Image (cartoon, rainbow, N blue to C red; front, side, top):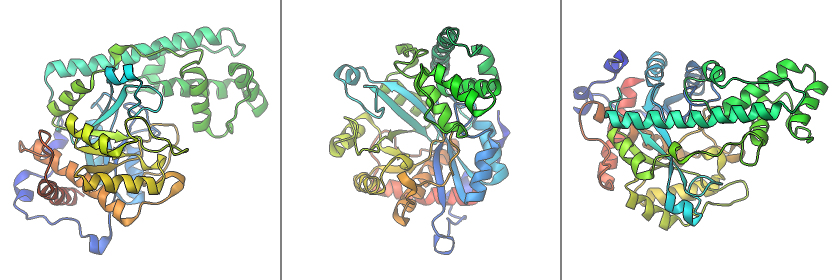
Length: 410
């Protein structure tokens, strides 16, 4: 068992009210980030220490690990949290498939694929404890996801054999060298970019190689912008319609109901990641009617939502957040950091627009609720009420406790 858990605040001192919360009148509203990916899935971070170094520099007091399909990063995340005194939120993310919505062509929170539904679990029990059959489900998800990307590598090699690039890749070697177990499309794009830049020195040679691989189209990215170049490689080679694209098998998905059950079994809070508006102001079919959306989430037993404000217009985001807060939902924000682009951890809206004080307070309150929940569950106590829609008094009580928990830790 991971011994770092023993160093978290115990139940009695905080439940008895001995420890005060955060003095926001004196220090202002602290910054938190409830959703980052780490190298255990795919991440902009080179290692687990980097986000904590950035958090310390940017004044962020709580970070939420949110990797796909795995909790393997929790012990290392917890150890770094203790070292840097940044409160750790233990989260996870899944891609579920709602077959009815898929059949009806309804896009949920994936802008392209009908029926595909991202769902997070917040504040999981730490150390993690799951029934064996749930562990097997998670292992199957990782195995099926890796099977798809292994097939992509095979198709990529076949495609590259028809070019003069001279490149070939071994999927197992990529998995061992670039991942902590889960091989994603972005890892493959990174491997292609690294191989190209090592093999073709100089702008002219690299541009010519990319142009050939892109079927005669010259690269649109600045060759010095590695993140943009990897995205372009991924979009051309590995996405739908690309020469190395392999569609996902249904075995790579659980149903939404299975994901909800797994999150609750792990002691977590089901949380819906909201896509909201894109750069053109468009919404998915599920998210365009906020009243219906709220009702459907409540009917599914999902009482918490999260947003990645960097992809949203400030005014749309604020109107949406205030609407869902008014209707009793708990709200959390994050940055994801699941692309090659290493942006700051401080949360901003599209175009760099800063959160105002009201949104910062809402984000802190969401993190406090998650912190209180995982603290209570770890101490064998009931936390966030996942079996019924929480009352304002229940949420207020969790917020106050969560602020104490975070303050005692940091």
